[in-house]
Image (cartoon, rainbow, N blue to C red; front, side, top):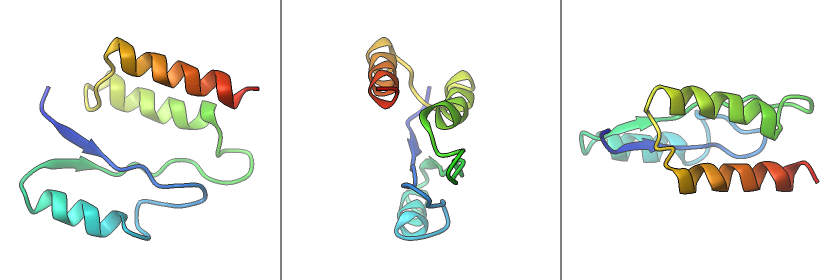
Length: 83
């Protein structure tokens, strides 16, 4: 797997605002691969379940690294989010 960069926007954001376009351009100028997914936003869609489904697509496509310690971090986030 090559080294990929995944830039994640914040709450109610999108990959086309704030600093994300600038950083994406800087990474691409170094001939590196960068992904900026557009995560679901809105009151009913901005939650762990919705965002993890999109992350799973990237993981299943081997775009992001899902070594066991990374999966543990995702599960810990899920547990914390559901408290």
